[in-house]
Picture: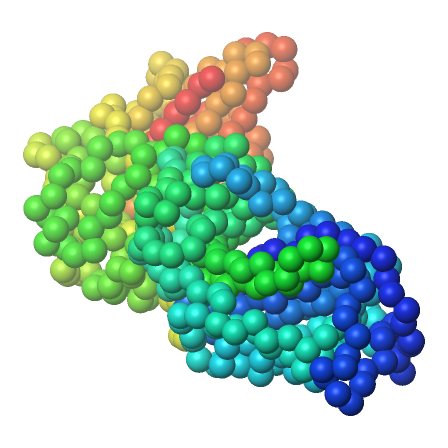
Length: 563
């Protein structure tokens, strides 16, 4: 709901009095030249006047004030009918009930044209004087509705009144009877920023206590709720029972509300003062991920805790741009980044997969996080919201201390990061070099099984060069072979990566014939390749894994999973 959610008190209904159509077809009582002689409104008619003061909000929307009023022969039990009539749109909601008890909520309803029929509006003068503002009468000929509505300038405070010269209603002057509520001031979440609300905990809403009843409006694709809150400045909004899908918008409005009932009996005029503070955001279903508070500065990462393998989420919103990994990813990364310290043991292979769901991720691993030239491996091979994956094998006898940089590609004039990130980190102590240099050696070798392996194919010969459809790009570099036995019903998943080469990966029945290829992968110019094959033959299959290269082969990392 991007239109303001305006609340007012207006209840009851009654019989319509005698009326004469205007030029626009709206039944009204003919006005007189002397307001003091204007006939009183028929018994049971209702009026509602609202003053809505909104605080500044995202993205750089300044504070504003709206004044709206409707006088009718029937309000049909809608609490905020003037808002519905003055802002008729798909994203306008109408409220027929407000929660009475603190920490309870009621549902709002989408706008429905049936509210207009057979609603009859009244004119009470050329203008309304409400506090310091003068609001002119306006008439919508298409909808056959008259109202007083205006965006005005200048906030107001203290006591205000309402007066009109009379027309269908008698002249009226309330004097200063309504005290405008304290301006709604939210301290958390920051109203001037866009937020991501997650499935991993409640949304902490914090505000400055003041005057007026406090409500919180929650708006999603599927519903709108109005919560009544105790004015203690603290509320944790639980989203677990709210119908939300990953990426859905979630908007919040903190509302302060004061009211004055100006006329008694069956003729009533409700006078409402409202203050609003909007917070805009979206929802992410994190599926049990742990929040990672990535460091904004390199020095904090170096002195901080070592990141452990796991599944994480976090944000770099508000971080600075301190480093660009263009030298090892192929593209400049001028967005804000986060730093995380990692340690890879001897013989360990660390694999990182990083996604910005709404932005273009860039990922790289450095040994010195103030010097992009120390990059070990990086990736920016996908566009927009794709996943970047890098892997590094520590083939030294000592632990490798490095810093993972979570970065983003940035287009000129646009924000680089507008959403959270998700990060998957796995660490395996790998086996040795299991790939043979020739097919003959692979045939005589024992079959390999599930595990992580690493070795070096530098200097390997180019014995196989499959063509399409096995590989779209010819693999003219050296390759290595490994035999695997796949039982009926088993699924074989293989991931291979040569950090210094363009990796090609494929499965063959006969390791001397490229034409026996089952399937292959050479999608990314940088980063790992993965193939998955399920045996549905009804018997045992003898398959050869071939880790190849488009150019010269080099050190490799290999993961094999038989499930």
